[in-house]
Length: 317
Image 1 (cartoon, rainbow, N blue to C red):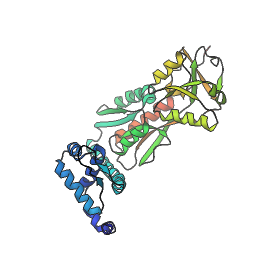
Image 2: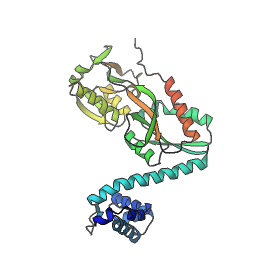
Image 3: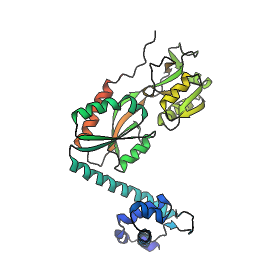
Image 4: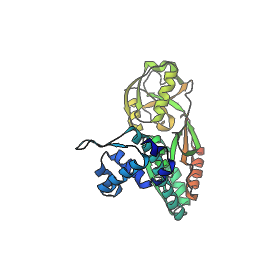
């Protein structure tokens, strides 16, 4: 069987549909569900997998029979990683051609996450729509910018807001703003009257954190580097929930300022001493894809809005 692997010309018989079938079976766990997802018959999927195995000279799937799910062999798992990349590039090419045909009309698909969606995106959309009224903005929100970047890689998004440094992949990005970390405490907390909070004192606090946001893990990692161990009592994916729990006295929160309603009288927002490296927010795109005029214009508008955004703590009397 190794003879087939060592003869590269035989691999020229591998077709996109073979790789798409492998990806679908691995994803769905059965030939039947894979066939349904791709619009083929089950026998067609089985034939495509058999052809692929014959070409590469290795068994790619374990077929236990009965109700048990089909699984990948070690060679199958290795080939799947390449198959996913190839199928993703095909989807990206399809998206490119669609965008090219559409010109200045059509859809522009944007990925975003909660704090950007609340504080940055509304003004960006207002200005962009005024300048590009024939372009329809389609938004996709996630708690994970890594998930949004994978959608960019597959051609399902044209642009996404993301944090730097980014997930490795075929991406380019332009930094838009830097977002400082702050400590949010209840208004009646003993630290509420302080000008700033010392990081080495945070080990005495109970924290409320975000569940999936990468910015929270970065802040907690920074504390760990300084030898500060924190007790996280609760995590939520909703910024309003985190701040509401702080306001009710259930703990404090170490979060980026953009996630905070700094004018909420129920809480006090403090700078940290020393300052935690700021969260860097960027707009990212697929480096190998055609960038439409509308996409370039959206980036320009986002840059203008972020340059005008004030990320300073309010002065309290």
